[in-house]
Amino acid sequence: MSERLIIFDTTLRDGEQVPGCQLSTIEKVQVARALEELGTDVIEAGFPVSSPGDFHSVECIAQAVSKSVVCALARAVPSDIDIAAQALKNAQRGRIHTGLGTSDQHIRYKFASTREKILEQAVNAVRYARNLIDDVEFYCEDAGRADNEFLAEVVGAVIRAGATVVNIPDTTGVCLPETFGQKIRYLMENVDGIDNVTLSVHCHNDLGLATANTLAAVQAGARQVQVAMNGIGERAGNAALEEIVMILRSHPELGMNTGIDTTRLFHTSRLVSSLMNMPVQANKAIVGRNAFSHSSGIHQDGILKNRRNYEILNPKDVGMLDSSLILTARSGRAALQQRCQLLGVEVEGEQLNALYDRFLQLADSKTDISDQDILSLTGQNGGMKERATLDYMNVTSGKGVESSATVRLTIDGKQYESQSAGNGPVDAAIKSIKKITGNRMTIREFLIQAMDHGSDDTGKVHMQVEFEGVLYYGFAADTDIVNASVQAFINAVNKFPCDRLVLL
Ligand code: KIV
Ligand code: ZN
Figure 1: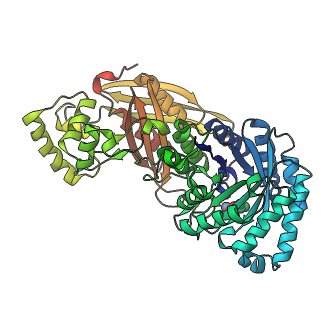
Figure 2 (figure 1 turned 90 degrees about the vertical axis):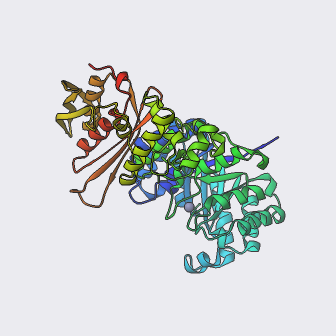
Figure 3 (figure 1 turned 180 degrees about the horizontal axis):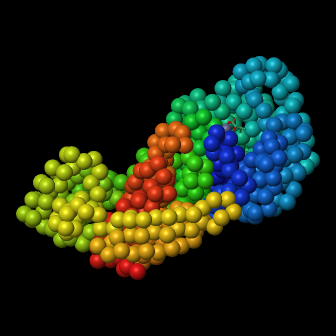
């Protein structure tokens, strides 16, 4: 029988602290609802004393969420704890997360205090919080660098004072998995009453070890992990929720399960990324754009024979549509043939060999081979000309103005015009194009990145558009991001199989 690991998500607290990631209350509630849907056990909603805005957000999340525990952070001082309790007053299941530094570094150089005084303050804070709420988690900040004996003393004392959960953070991300695991084991073996509380960990990623340290702690007895979607958080971030969940799922021998609906991981990752303006790196484990893309010929051939040759996870299990084979100079005949089939072109034998030679010549001079290029090589599109082009676009948008767009496209030599309203200029323009092109496509991924700095910068738009169960990638760059977005959409539409588009 496997044991249940409690997933405590801190995307909205440690994650939201990151410069540039700040969210409005409405957006925070949206993320909290998505985390609840995902199956997160505890949602750390914010640090209410830090600002009236954060207080309000915690209040709203406490009202909006009913299944997950809603947690509020407070330093180990009565005024913080009072405000956290007030923000949580309407929560169905509220928790206060209070604590302070326990390493000698923090005690001496952050608080100019002593171990004795810190111990007393910890106990007082937990007692104070317990008078206001039943569920109190105590964090021993910088536990990663704290002396194990003193840490055990603090943990024992806060348990006696009424803590229900004790959190052991590796605040600076300095620990090695083995030593962090030993620290947890030491506490499990040396603290009276440890079995009556949940031991939690919170690992930072300064050395890229957050996931490994979290896992080592779970193997040593921790039963709650503090994680964040896409691994966001202070500095190099926190352990990534999606990584811990999928590691435990891929290794049943670890004997742990979670309540996470893994098929919602990709969606939640993209929601957080787009609301927080924090692109997910393409090679990010589990949720990166390339996590299920195969580009070398040997790998592509292996995948086509049996996907388990190179894939240990099924992309559908994390909510991605399917794996993709990227065509580059290292791709083999099998991948080229599969792409041709997807594009509705059958090539075999000598014809395939000849096509492959032409493909290699092109791939040597061009890094990304598009479906349009393949169609052109197979002689299916009458040359390199794009099928659909944008002739004219006029968008209206602004504060207090409903966004609308008029677009004119030429498709296969014929002109089409359409108008739409939308929740912004991009939405309005893309709705107009969808009207012309049959409305059966869905944008699955939409990423806008500035190339450099400044308001005069060029925006790069990457888009994945789903059409008839297949993902088509679109790209464009322009100083006008509405134009770049529309061109990226058209770029993807141009890759749809020619006979499948139903035009206006
Ligand atoms: O990194 C840390 O120690 C924290 C605590 C507030 C839990 O974020
Ligand atoms: Zn932290």
